[in-house]
Image 1 (cartoon, rainbow, N blue to C red):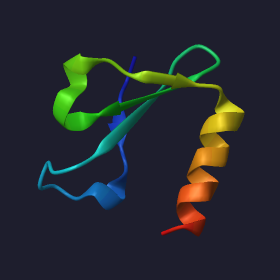
Image 2 (image 1 turned 60 degrees about the vertical axis):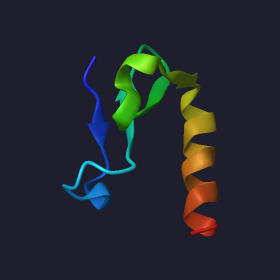
Image 3 (image 1 turned 90 degrees about the vertical axis):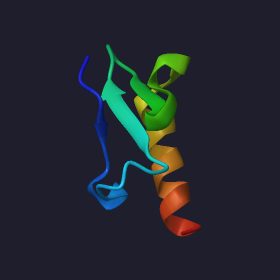
Image 4 (image 1 turned 120 degrees about the horizontal axis):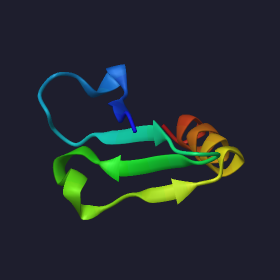
Length: 57
């Protein structure tokens, strides 16, 4: 599984969220606590979350 973070996160290794494609799902985790686990979201739910975040930016 390959985790990636947004290019908007910058290089300061601050508060970042990472995502990964995981078998018909999207994994979401905190980059500062990668060993703490991750959430699994259905792709449609992840897309809805991203759209919501864009609107409330």
